[in-house]
Figure 1 (spheres, helix red, strand yellow):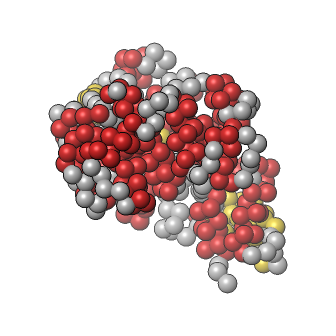
Figure 2: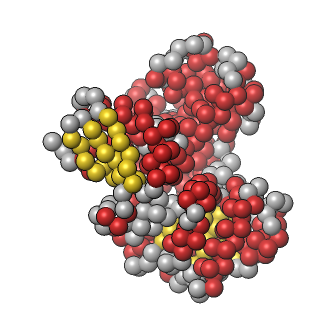
Length: 447
């Protein structure tokens, strides 16, 4: 029989795709399987507060997940377990706002596809690219802090992960966190009376990577904690790299003090990719798929999909999936046919139809009362895409999906948004779906 530790690691893999990213990082990631005897499974957690929350909120889900893995009924008990007793390696540096400082032992914290080697450089991002290489090689000496901003899907997170990979290869300690994760860890530290410990843990890193700072704009206490952390790191000559969707001066709710700090170093934008950059990205991605796609087809896509890199990737994934599934050759004629196949549909209708087709469902089933796993997942993906792609309000989404209530829509949206970063299968499913949606939008513009 597998050890309790191995069983729990398997369970964590399952739980990671069943709960939100924030809940997983805050409540589950720092846990460990302690023992399994007489159908009682003991899980070690860092504090009584965490044990109490898991018992009240996730006991049923955890029990069900363990029962499926073990093959029989199991009772779960959460107990405080001294973090110093945890084996070094698997949970090394676990108490960080990102769930773990990335060291050589934890290099998988960063996406292996997001490296400097496969980042496509063009006029739109050349300065940001050069600056990130400089701070990765010589942290704390130039451009501190480095602030990168752009609209979504332009490569900010790619560059953060690339810095992480490069710094780790140079033997440096790196902490990576999103604004959401930082906030969740800070709130937990307040409840546990461990705010100073929370800040102190970050002082040991050489490079601090902070993604999407705009999300703490309306959180005064979190801003204050971040400002103190910033000052600690800066005064100790630690490198700070921050990303956002706009420059500091345009964040009205950020404190003036924090805006000033963010502008101390280099503030650089990443612009939407120009045609040559889009074409280079498509060529590189096409090479990865190992499917022959003519340059004429790639040029057609590069001309018609202009917004961001993710849309380009999504369109290419959709087209290559069609090639694999149908054996259809990707010619200008077939791509144009795909472009026009949904041209008569608009906005949310396109999203629902594309998702329904992808899961072999009807739109009526999506908006109806079916609650099986496949339909529920498809419905939540629609919620996410209507919000992200069509900028619909939660009320509009609920109305379009059969008059569902606000709480259901918010839960579905947040669940998919959280899981996309930890579930690669779901991430690529949604990229493929977005690809078809983007092709439809491009078609409407053309025709």
